[in-house]
Image 1 (cartoon, rainbow, N blue to C red):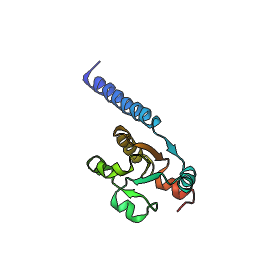
Image 2 (cartoon, one colour):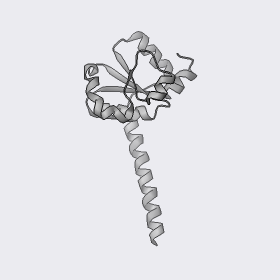
Image 3 (cartoon, rainbow, N blue to C red):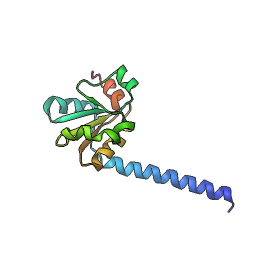
Amino acid sequence: MNTQDILLYLLIGLTLFIFVRKFIRTKKVKHYSPVDLNQQLKQNKNSTLLDVRTKAERDSQKINGSIHIPLHELKSRIDELNKHKEREIICYCQTGSRSVSAAIILQKNGFIIANLRGGILGWNSAGLR
């Protein structure tokens, strides 16, 4: 086995490790479909929506009533969410991927969390505004 083979196997192993780790972490997060989230918001006022997209993405469209903290700022601004600690914080982004990362960060900090599956694109596809 030469050096290139070893590097290739290490790269494959690392990629597999990252994928499996993300999959396991994602399983620990509650996910709402857009339709289920819409019903949840209508029935339960004890939820907070958190938009973790960039400012430019948010400026183009948002879900009314949501709080905006971009994912890259979340760790430094997490204290802003302390007043929502007893509420379920439902994270969303463009497609539902970054919001899972945000939900995991919040969960590690003692928040009750969930994720909007499919993000705002799924929300729009479901005909919700």
